[in-house]
Amino acid sequence: MTKIFPLLGLLILCSSCITIYGVTSDYKKLDPALHAYLATYEEGKDTLYNRVYSITGEQIRKQMEQHDKILVYTFANGCSSSTCYPLATFKRWADENGYKLYLVTTGYGNLSSTLSQEIDLPLYVINYKAYNTNMQGKYSNRFLMDLLQNEANPKAIVKDPYVNLYAFEKGKLTQVSGDLLNLESQFISSNK
Image (cartoon, rainbow, N blue to C red):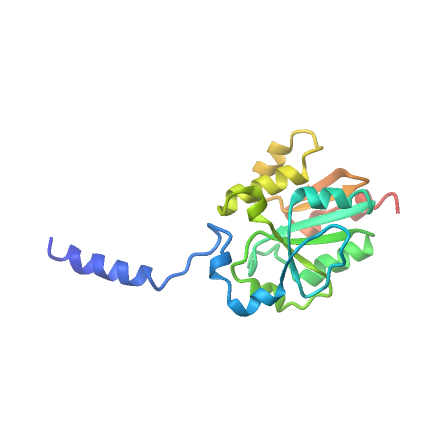
């Protein structure tokens, strides 16, 4: 029994040294120096590259009235998966296939790793306040339900944890994928 108390003390000490990202929006953990890069998306106003705009799925859907082809990529900052390519790769693919690209991060944790890529596009973050929760899983699902609201069976798409690319043509979802290399550009861009 006396061995348990030192172990508990060590666990408590170590837990104060560990920062866990991805459970909430991580806004409160954001380096104050990065606040200058944050803005709220407003329809009709110009967006600037090297800024991160909070946005909802509904706001992206409204953009489908102005752009025939939209590609939405949702990602975690600092992702190290084999399918987390540099953001410039997504930009190049979108440019080559005639898509308006929305690079949407799911939270504020490790935002500096995304900003350091210096891509000449505005970046977006899910507006967790619009979904009345700070829990990343909940507001991410609500964002996707907004984005996919006009699609048949959006819940099935949202439940797939490996899907993070959503390609739309004329407001209709044409393809989803978890890997940019699996998007079929000839299928998607047939109306070029």
